[in-house]
Image (cartoon, rainbow, N blue to C red; front, side, top):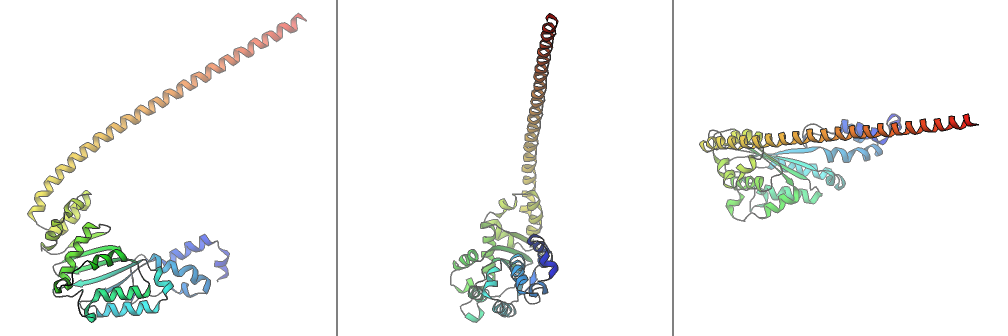
Length: 301
C-alpha cells in the first residue's frame, strides 16, 4: 500500500475510494474495466473491489438476435471470480425489440432469456436487474426488480410458441411494471396506442396519478393525443384542485394550532417569570427581616 494511503484513517481511505471508483453512469461490460487503483496491491484490492462491483451499475446491449450481448456477458462472467460475481448488485439489460424478435424459444440456441439466466446462475451473479427495452412502435420501457423475482415472473410464461415472441414478452413486462411497481419509466416516442391499451387495461392510470407531475409528464408521453387522456385530464385537474383546497384548509388549521401553542408557551413563560419574581421578593423581605433582628439584637447588648 502507498505510504500516504497507509497513514490515512479507514474512513478517509473509503471516502477516496468512493470518489475514485463509483461512476455517475452505467459501466458497459464490453468496454469498461476496473480502474488501476483496484490492481495496486492485495490490501487495496481487498478494500476496493467490492465497492467497485457492488456500487456501480453494469450494462450491456442485446441486439435483435442477442448473440453479441450474450457471448459478451458469458465471457465477462467467466473472467470474474465467483466471489466478485456475488458482489454485483445492479445489472442493466438493454434490448431492442422489433416485430418477430424472439426472446424465448424452444430451441436452446435461440432462447435468449434462459441463456442469460443460465450464465448468471452458473456464476453466482444474482443482482437487481433493470431491463431497458426499446420496441418498434416507439416506446421505451424500464423494469427493475431482483433477479429471483424476475426469474419467478418468467417461469409463469406458458410454453406456447406465441409466448416466445418479443411482443408477448413485452406485454407481460408492461403488466409487471404496474403490478410490481418498483421502477417505472416509459417514454412514448410515436403515436401508437399499443402502450395505452395494455397499461390502461390493468389500471395503471390510478398509479400514474399518484403524483401530479408524474401523471402529467408520463401521461403525455404515453398517451400522446388520445382523447380519453385529454378528457380525463380535466377531471384530474378538478380533483387536484379540490385536494389542494383541502390541503390549504388543513395547513391553515395547523398554523392556528401552532400560534395557539406558541401563545400558551409564552403565557407559561410569563407566569413562570412572575412566580420567580415573587419568590425573589419574599426572599429579599426575609433577608431584610433577619437583618433587622440582627441589628436589634446587637443594639440591646
